[in-house]
Image (tube, rainbow, N blue to C red; front, top):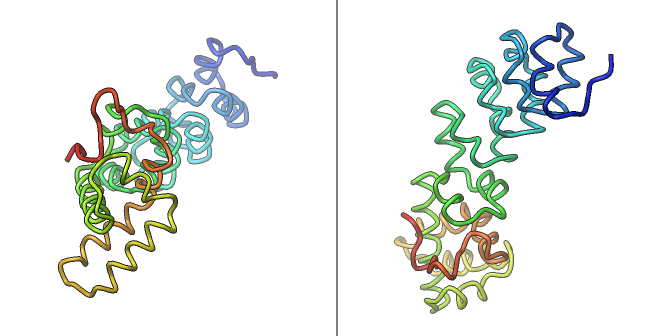
Length: 208
C-alpha cells in the first residue's frame, strides 16, 4: 500500500493503520500525524523517534512514559524545534531549557521574543554573567563592540583561560559561565538573529 504525500491525507492516515511499518511511513512524512495514531503507536519508541525527527512539536503526542524512559527523544525534539520544549514534562523540560547546546542549536533564526521565552532562568543568568565577564575583560560596553571581540568558540575559551590565569577567586563563577555558555555566545556574535537592534535589544538588556 502506498502512502499519499498529501499533507491533509497524512494527518489522518495513521488513525486507520494497523501495521507499524505503515505508521512509520506516515510519521516519516508528517510527524504531526502521530496525533491521530492509536495509543499503541504513541507508546512505540521507534515511531516516536521518527515523528520527532520529522517535526519536533510531535513530542506532545508521544506517551509520557516513553519520554520518561527515553529522554533522548525529547532532546531530538528540542533540537528540531525550540518551542517543543514546552511540551516536555518536568524535570526534563527545565533541564533542556537550561542546556546551552540545545538552546543554541534550536534557536538559530528566531526573533528575540520567540527565543528568550523558551530559555530557562538559570541559563539566562549564566549568559548575563558570561557577558559581564567578557565586558570586564575586553573593556567594552556596546553591543557592536563586544561582538567584535568574539569571533568563535576558540576566542571565548581564550578569554576564559586568561581570566583563569589571574587566579582570583571571584572570577571562578564567571569563568565557568563563559565556558558553559560558549555555544550561545558564539551564536549571538555570529548572527543578529537573536538581537533586534531596532527594538533596542542589546547585550546590555539581557532578559534576566
